[in-house]
Length: 251
Image (tube, rainbow, N blue to C red; front, side, top):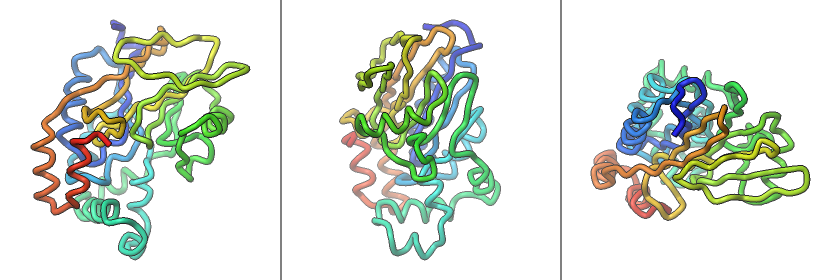
């Protein structure tokens, strides 16, 4: 593992108001000599503890970019009531009720993209950031890389960890590993760090990434947490049962 705090970052995304998963991840991060923690958005949505999660991020993360669930939460309430499925609409209404004025102001002031040393951060694709495009396939990756000016970028949004690699001729999607992966200085990368609060890759454990930009070492971490306790919070908040079930399925 990297030993220097000067070049080692933790990158988290898609917390989705799951405080039990977030606290487990933050505790895991504390066991590493990180320079700072970076957040890629979607702190709210789906889950029962949006205010607590926003406050943790405000207190902990050096840089945060906005996610689509934050963006949706700022739309008129009439849209919240009519246009979205209840699994999305109800947790966003809960966020609007729970978050303080200061927390809402802080979220509104976060950027869509950010640069930290040689790293680019975004919630979704760098291609048309306000549209929150997914990076699912080669065509999506091509559009993203066309807008990427750095060696590496980090994103979330799909809740599925992935590593896209590009050279002059090809692009390919590599499987993440919990062991350190050495990135090739002659290529470019965009890394999906997975989801803290609602993974969708059939692994219910919270997921985040560690990156040492001096050594170009990348690690995806999987962190277990008390899912039963988290589900009790969903039930107590009156959120749809589907939202609680899916955190146990990892799907």
